[in-house]
Image 1 (cartoon, rainbow, N blue to C red):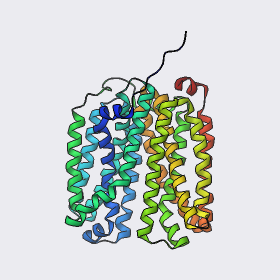
Image 2: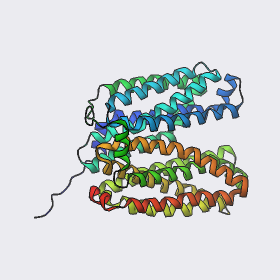
Image 3: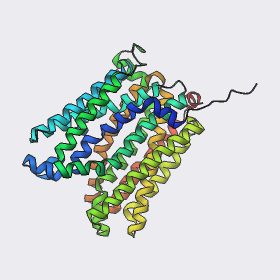
Amino acid sequence: MSAPTIVHQSDWSMIRKIWPLLIAAALGLVPFTVMSNFLPAIASDAGVGVDLMGSFRGLGGIAALIVGVAVAPLLDRLSRTAVATIALSVLAVGCLASLLGHPIAWVMFCLLIGAGTAVLNPAVAALSADRFESGHDAARAATLVSSTATLTAVLAAPVLALPAVLWGWRADMIGVFVALLVVAALIARMPSDQQGRTALGYLEALRTATRRPGATDLLMVSLLRTTAFMGSLAYISAAFDERFGLSTGWFSLVWSTSGLAFFLGNFGGGKYLHRRGTEVAIPMMVAAICTATMAMVVLYTAPTLWSAWIAVAVVSASHAVIAAGVTTAVVRSAGPARGTVLGLNGAAQALGTFLGAAIAGAALAVGGWVAVATALGAVTAIALYFALRAQTPGYAQISS
């Protein structure tokens, strides 16, 4: 007797069911985008240097790491609808605080936005996955969330530019504040599939999540991938300026190329896994890690601007494919502990952001751009070991 044919839902069908959650994921990135794009004006209004104001951003990463780890085990115990609503409200309060313009207000902004996004992203991804009974559809829903957030990072700057030019950066913050509250109200009205699903204790939830087949190895892949990619993003502007004399205006095209390539890689990788099944996630990640390693080396050692520019696109696309593979594999293998694992994955990415900047900076100081290529390429390559380890018999059984 032949196995029944599995019919997967189309992307548009899934989007119609989870569109408020996709908007929430997109909005989560906007507050920091406003701060980054209008940093000189913000620093001037606050009466501090750009370097000091920019350093406040690191507080958001610290908050994201601490809150992400602390809250992760609760995402499988509490109503995810309520958690997402609260996280959006925290982001709104952060935007409201920024309107004061004082340095202390910006410290509060960075702490609140970092903590809010650390909770919002895994909650929204898990809540989106909960809307579908099929494991394949659940995993695809989670990757749609990450793809939407990535696309926002590419489009947010030009969309935000017009109101900021007319009325200043505060106009953007007020608009984001209102949008966050509206989306929070929409999500609050959505039914929660998670209320009372598990009665696991806090530490038991952590143990359950990390003991899922391949979970710890997948988290290590995510940590190392983020370390290499974010380390590259931290210094890529300086690399193109020093090596090719590329001005800020022209470099914006390189940055847009990176963002667009990441979106296409994440969306396409998730789509491929949705069609083929999670059993090909590990082979896909292995291929992407190998590609990313080689492209990272080329990026910082290429002799011409065009070859380095192409390498930027390849690095971003391959890292996006790895990210899609991790998200898909986590959602499919974690089962009822998916909220906890997704929360830990977010914390791993926050830690990777710090490690990446530190490793790339140290390598640059010691050996220039060749050392940066070697260090970040090596970090990417180490992820290959953990990706292969994640392909356990238990994981394969769950993914089938």
